[in-house]
Length: 361
Image (tube, rainbow, N blue to C red; front, side):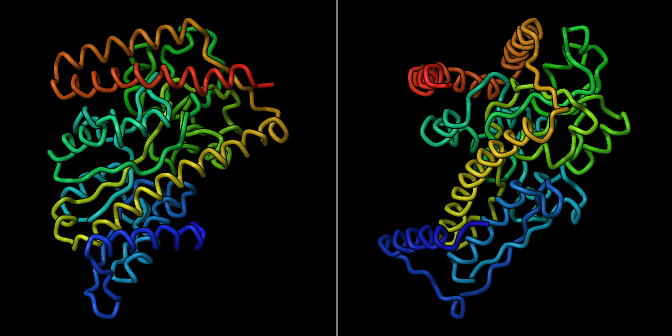
């Protein structure tokens, strides 16, 4: 949970900014009560992802002096983990928390706002969102659906997945049943993988019963607690989700009807909760990665063979070009990300990469 000291700092900053702008925070007693509902894709008490939502809601209540509360419904309550966008769009829920690439079947252009194979890492992607035009492009896409979308927390670079059998070459992918969402699923399907998407709470059972042969979830921050290593010992490094950003969804009509100070409070709480989730994910992954070498000797860490990576890159590029030719908005966002990545990666290489390359013992 967010420490009280950290929350008070953020609350003070927001209150000061509102006062300087000529606004005032109304007391809980004098102001009307705003009660919103949020639907999330994740199960009840799901760590990290669910904690980010709880932190956001707690901050909204505290910063508003109790004027606004947000009730959270997990997928156990609403029973539609992949229906969050539709429910927020319809006004059934004022808010949602999910991942943008889950909506690719409804709108292919939503893919870009989670992460893309061989794309930007988290710091690069955040720079693109807030200073490189990403938020404007995301607004253009989600305006069509009558919702606002905001960054909702990043997992960092995700692992490539858990496999029951070692992947030694392209032939090992043919007929493999794997849970993997987003654009990466389309890439792997071109290489013969039978791709599916399954909610978080059903993943272990699906792998254990043979419904799937492999899955990717997140990384050490969440994977060890899920127990995948007990039934799929081969753990592969990532390629497909270098900066997986979750999202907060907000019904536009409901948001626009709020007083300006509550709009500012919600946006501030979402931004802080997203950053806090990224820091938490990075920390927990580091802690659990250390556990792997000490407590789980059965886990076999692997990197996909060069021929497999080369084939993935080839199919990824082909798909991007094909879809760009069919959809002007897809092309616009793809070109924007590609241009920004070319620019920002030069700095990443001369800063982080050069430092790490020369200083890892």
